[in-house]
Length: 198
Length: 198
DNA sequence: GTCTATATTGTGATAGAC
DNA sequence: GTCTATCACAATATAGAC
Image (tube, rainbow over all chains, first blue to last red; front, side, top):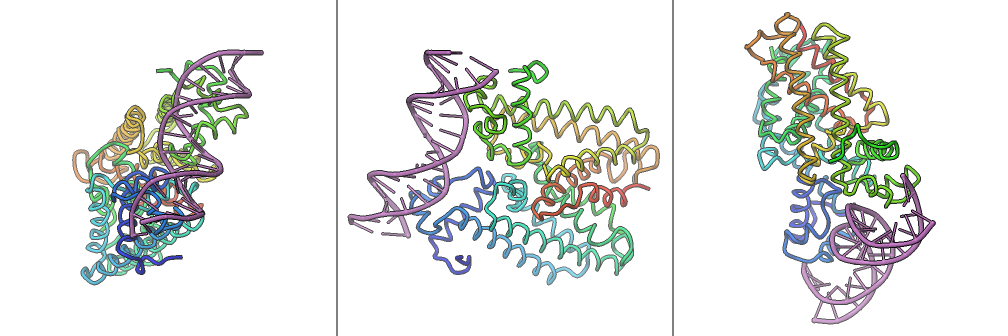
């Protein structure tokens, strides 16, 4: 399998457009022809870069996950406490949604999971695990420092809080779209945090 | 437009199967042929009942929304206080997800919104507004009774709590699928409620 | 890296017989 | 209400020229 860091600039263009199309229309809502049309080339040229749709989408998700991991590392470096880190995390979702209500790529693919190639489904699972694990550590840290409700090892558990926060943010994009609302995911995040931060 | 309460039993069968297929594979993930195959008839027979896919899906969403409204009415009748009503609401999502991780129909369609016929998008918006409004009343009631954090008119507002709870539940299904987890939406609901109920 | 041409299959939809 | 036959078009994918 091709690696996202090891592709030509022409192939990168394909990945850029495919990512954007999937955040807007989903895996089952975009075609090779859509990608080609946006770039201004023809359909078979896409196949030259990525032989199958499964391969293309796998690379898109791998790169997306990589970028989110870099963002999480940046948060760790720039913010010292749990509340600031959790708000910075929500800001990532907010910026995505503010671009014409684009969804988190893996939020979209999570909904479509039953129709995805097995390899892509595996990458989606990996994305969520990375996010849930990072959030779990942040919430645990907050509980230890006393900035988040609950005691370390007590209730509500840090892993459960992480899960709920992640679900609220992913859900905020889906519901916001469904309601055709510009209400940012950050508002949902603030409501959640207002009940969880001490 | 046909009304869901005024269709033959053969057409109802079509609506049943289409609803199920959409909860599993989404609007862009099922075809007239899929519906026909599950019923055991041929594709043109589906067109006999519903001339276009847009018409079929509109009826499916209208019936789905109607059933949820009936369920909300039943909760109002069976449970007297906000905590019990909020838990009964979460149980509705749980039962759906427990059936092989089916999604809320409108959660799926919310993700796919940009690719939906305009009429269907309008029905999805209506579904979410009904749910958010009902939840808003329950949270407001809870705040007035002192069973939910915050004072009436204070912060966090009942409408924001309602929005966050709805997002957490819809997100729980999408994320649960993405992680391939059997973790029920009710667990996410309990985590949320544990921080919100007094 | 891109193109034209083509194969194959799937999709929403219609016409008309039973 | 269901069927066979058919249409127009779009989808993923391949072969081979430039």
